[in-house]
Amino acid sequence: MSEKKEKSAGELLREKLVMKSKNGFSKLSDEHLAVIDAYCEGYKAYLDASKTEREAVIAAVALAEENGFIPYVKGMALKAGDKVYLNNRGKALLMAVIGTRPITDGVTIAAAHIDSPRLDLKPVPLYENTELAYFDTRYYGGIKKYQWTAIPLALHGVIVRKDGTSVTVNIGEDDNDPVFCITDLLPHLGREQMSRTAGDVVRGESLDILIGSRPFKDDEGSDAVKLNILNILNEKYGIVEEDFLSAELEAVPTYKAKDIGFDRSLIGAYGHDDRVCAYPAVTAILDAGTPAYTAVTILADKEETGSAGNTGMQSAFLEYFIDDIASAFGEKGHHVLSNSICLSADVNAALDPLYPEVMVATNAAKVNHGVCITKYTGGGGKGSTSDASAEYMGKVRSILDANDVLWQTGELGKVDAGGGGTVAQFIANMDVDTVDLGVPVLSMHAPMEIVSKIDVYMAHKAFLATMKRD
Ligand code: MN
Ligand code: MN
Image 1 (cartoon, rainbow, N blue to C red):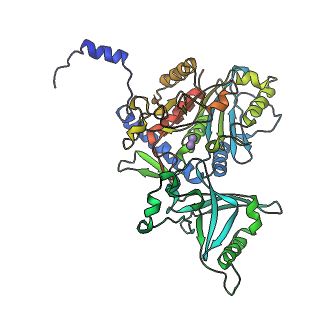
Image 2 (spheres, helix red, strand yellow; image 1 turned 135 degrees about the vertical axis):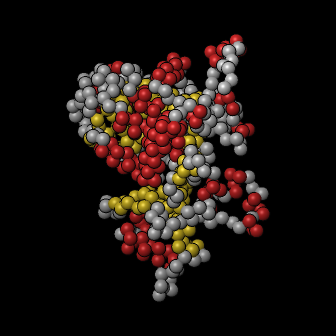
Image 3 (cartoon, protein in one colour; image 1 turned 90 degrees about the vertical axis):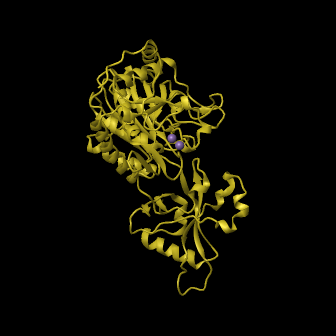
């Protein structure tokens, strides 16, 4: 053993003054890492059950009810410790635990979204071309279209029949199910295609899903393959072609969430954005006990298309819910909102060493460095974003540090590289102090996205610590 050398003045000063970002593996004990791995098994199960916003609501409601949450009924009396949820049209969810402080002290909000980029069937989706049957689609959210060909797809959603009854569709997930696929051009004949820009290599109208090739037998009429598909759908789901007009069917990758890497430190899955924040936002409120401030978890729909519509964060449903809770205490909703704080729980881009040119390393989130606080999103000159105040950043920092949450900060790429937004701006617009906090993701919006297990768990810890603030 060598003698302990005294630290130089420079070393001491560096320790005192210079900001450090630490990889979680250098800070966390083996026991802590085992807790993190176990937590992520629950997350993977949630992912596999929640490939669409509707399924994500169903899975979250199940967790809520197991933990004593009951449906909120307009006008119901509320007291500290009460746990309620409100299912907004099956596609968005509000959960609340009533705190001990007066409601006008404000609430703590964690707001994630549960929709992910995918391919939606058009209202008239089914057609036959050259004796092959297809579903015509329109993509939902920001995708690189070329990533969606030649991968196995499942269909999830709901069809409402003319008589008002509905049928749930989930096909392609079970090992015995057939799957679906979008064809791509063979490289041998792809010379013209490969000379196009990447956004144009596969065009939106080429993203049609191959669904069959076998004609209805004993039929000399036209479109016998389509007829046969309709017959199968009629037998399986009791629907006719017109019923697609009142349907929401979403094509998503079939694969399940998997550990990535020999060391199993990462998770690859479809739809981390933003279930990787939704799940921790749910588990945090389940673990929050009876907090001082009322805690609210929001799982919103439609973020990937701009948060419009009655299940998106631009809708009044949050405002109405807060107003209802305030009314239970004889108070006004906006008096509650003005004193509330929000963690806008959404993912950020992780620094990808294969594509360093779009990031500034000092201001980029790194895999395994913990949950990422993003002061502002947007792009260019901070367009279309809510920029969290220094005061609120200071408050969140101190909560996270006091609770040993591993966290880092990150911008969404270089100033002029592009940009994006989250629901933060819509909640901030309600006079709520809001900042983005979420998990860094590699290959964001790809059919398989990648996150670190440490970072997922730190999102849970961050939401929990904030909900339990005193
Ligand atoms: Mn997102
Ligand atoms: Mn997204």
